[in-house]
Length: 130
Image (cartoon, rainbow, N blue to C red; front, side, top):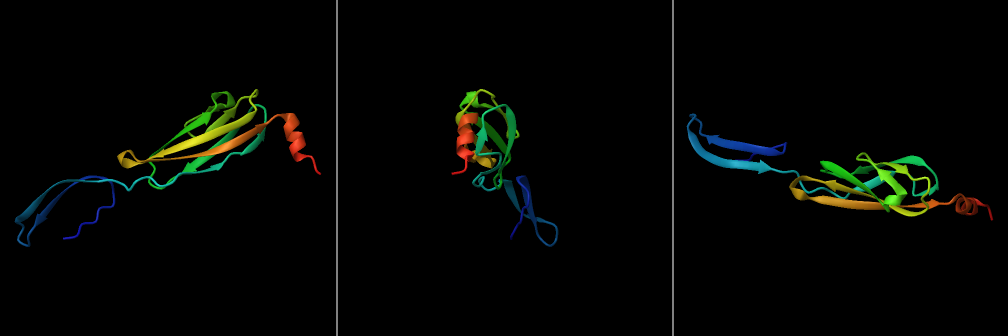
């Protein structure tokens, strides 16, 4: 007997013979998705000039059922549950935007991107032609 199940969750499988009699009765079977795959981050800058503003990062991981975001240090700004960063106008330096993708069975995958926030003086030096 081969059974294909295309959705996660619990199922009760009953096997009957040609004449409608119960030949076997199974226990409840729970089908879970495979573990969450590697998470990737896209969108949003990796280099920006100091000052208030917003940036949106997106995440993608196969079999993920939820994502959680973090920005550090906290002085860099705040990040919401959809990956939108509100940058602090006073912050300059290196900030890290991290995301954790969570899947079934307590599986997870984490990835980070470093964002360099330059002061206006550093930015003008960085883009000055040689």
